[in-house]
Amino acid sequence: MNTTLQLALLTLAQTDAAPGAAPASQVSGRSALQFIAAGGPISYLLVTLSFVALALIVANVLVLRRERLLPLHVQSGLENLLAQRQVAQAVRFCQTEENQSFLASIVGGGLSKAAKSPYGMLDLKTAIEDAGSREVERLERINHWIGIIAAVGPMLGLLGTVFGMIGAFATIGSLSGVQRSQELSTYMSLALVATAEGLIVAIPCTVAFAVFRRRIEAIATEAGDVAERLVAPVMSQAAAPPPRLPAGPSGVPGGPLARPAVASTPPAAVAAATVPLAPARGNTGSGNGGAAS
Image 1 (cartoon, rainbow, N blue to C red):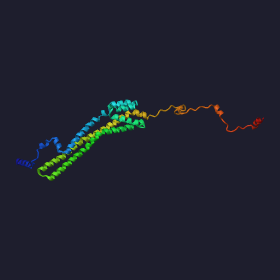
Image 2 (cartoon, rainbow, N blue to C red):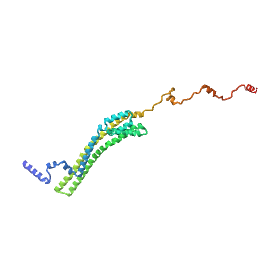
Image 3 (cartoon, rainbow, N blue to C red):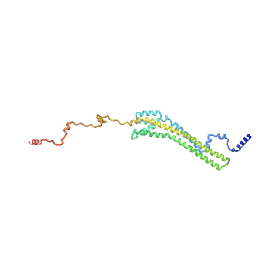
Image 4 (spheres, rainbow, N blue to C red):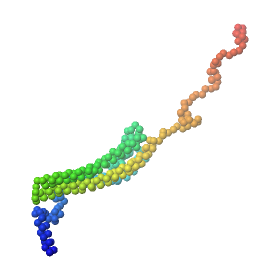
């Protein structure tokens, strides 16, 4: 009896199976290109974005290297020049083609801006911070595009899903039988493939964006420390007070150079130049008599 029941169930399963249904081995053997084609135009767009994202990731890996952004020969060259306060030579050193780097752009830009400032090298720290902000923004341009792809990928996948669901519901209302089943499976494949491709593009791009942003922040912090160390001799010279003149005998700063020389007058000349304020009182009669006689 058990054998009879098994045969009946097998016959019923074969009867209920759709005549146009493909074998399981045939469905599972579909290639990647067939899955991409099943996703429709949105699928091709997502594949293109995946190649663009891969190129941007490779570019970031090649650019965000410490030996390329903070080369040791640039650090040693700038350290020797700035230790001797040779600002003009340091700017020319940063502008040469073989020394072009993230660090050279920061230090060279800061020195050039400070040299043109009315405050001179007292404005050097602010000038270096401004130059560093500009260079960090340039480094982040490639990473920003990776972030844009990471944000756009899921939305494109959702758009493909919506198109697939619209087609599926339209098929349910307009077709019937085996043809409806085939069209429905086609549109559902479009919806699911687009969703999967959007996530496949977005997940690696999101991880790469976070990793590269953290690396840019680390390199920018290290470059700021190195630049501050390199320009320290120039900044210390600019912040030093002006030299003071030697003190004079009286202890006044500047001594005889700060006080004008005053010619001394002899006591005899002072006595001769003294004029009495009132006529002297005495024997006027004798004086008059003498004069009369």
